[in-house]
Image 1 (cartoon, rainbow, N blue to C red):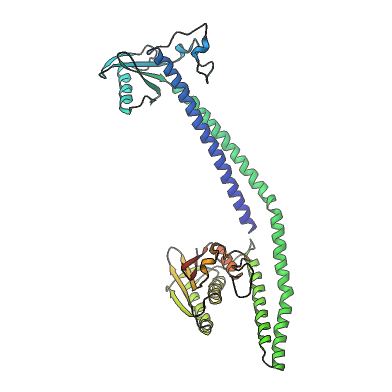
Image 2: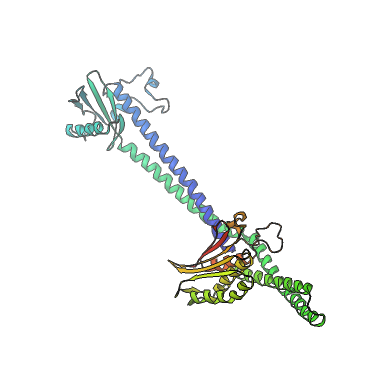
Length: 409
């Protein structure tokens, strides 16, 4: 149980760290791409304002040529370091001319292909291959300026990849730290849990002898003084306490991390039939009815004794909390994995916290009055199922019917 708690803590912490770092990386990527586009758009705006050419640099007031968010971005050398070309069309959409003087890798056919891509896209800004473009109006029609941005895109990509590598290394270091620290973190819980298990073991040894003596003395008194309803009550409560102590001990053993269960191949069909047969007399005595739907030839590889106890707990729980004159149903079918279902009529099912019925020491009746609620047996059933890597779920079958569905893997 402690190992499961530690693994769950590591898993949750790891997921939280990954989500945080992924969010940071995503934000950084979006911000970097947006900054790249804004810078490239500013250059395209600067060129389009000059009708396809760089405006003369203002030596007297150089800040007038700079964007507010990018001081120092435009300098006297910018026209010589920026690769771009411009294409013009008339009002009918016919090609007029292309200015390719500021770039050597693009010819007129390539320029027209890029312009055609822009017209098809129907956008005024965007990327065409490695060129950031802007569509602008002229006196004679339309112009499109294309600014070469492969170097800027490469720098942005390098920045994002570097940040990703640094964050990945940070995540790895944090995960190592979490794994190392987790053992120390759960140590107080482990110590408390060990004390709890030791208490249960000690209580089992200390209570067994007095309970045995009480039950024995009840039988002796009954033989000497005759039958009495008070003696029946003492005997019933003594047996109930003895059963409870046994369940607590079994539950404590199932929680041991190093507990090795003896798995063998056995017939799950026979286990269900045998257990149902054992309970048939008790069910009839309480004037209840039992319906079974057990698929033949269902085999399973696990601890047969534990699975028998599981089926017994389900039927015992159904008998205890079935409405007077009600019905109990036990079914078994083989799907991908064996599925075991136990249902019984229970008029107060709507008031139950179904997702908590299998929690340890949980009782549906918070006052814990005798004869109400669901006891420790279901938590023992849950431990048996989890030991076999299965799952158990409580559900409301009908308006006044409760069921438990177990999948064994």
